[in-house]
Length: 217
Image (cartoon, rainbow, N blue to C red):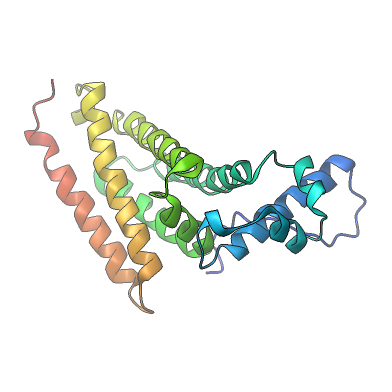
């Protein structure tokens, strides 16, 4: 998509002079990008420090100038995707004044971002249940994602009297739909995106239909 937002911003070729810090950041990004490319069809546990460093054009010892371990690199990959998406989702929910407006904007944002960063999301969905530091990091990011949503949901008049616990429960349901939608997009055949996003909007509307009937405690 021409208007998609891609979180991979590495540009190794530049005619402008760069500072030492900029070079360090570019090298760090090269390590992240190399790891992601190597993870296209394999679990993170099979990835070695040596092959990541080699793919980025570094000797293995230089890896430690940027990451303390492979686990730290993996957590950085998780944060690179999820934190950017969290910011985009909050922006998408800033203007809509209705549930339908929020639903449409949120689904469109997820669709755009997943399609622009499929490698990242294949990595996230694969590692989510893998255990260890990466699975814990993904779980933390999802909780933060849900927490952001709960805060935004409290802006709507019918939800202002809801308890914090119930707002988070509603947010968790919505996030679960978004995760399901992400997996479906990654597994979709060509031409299926419109059907998948349409189904996502229906699922979210179904959840929100229950709001007027829920007695918060």
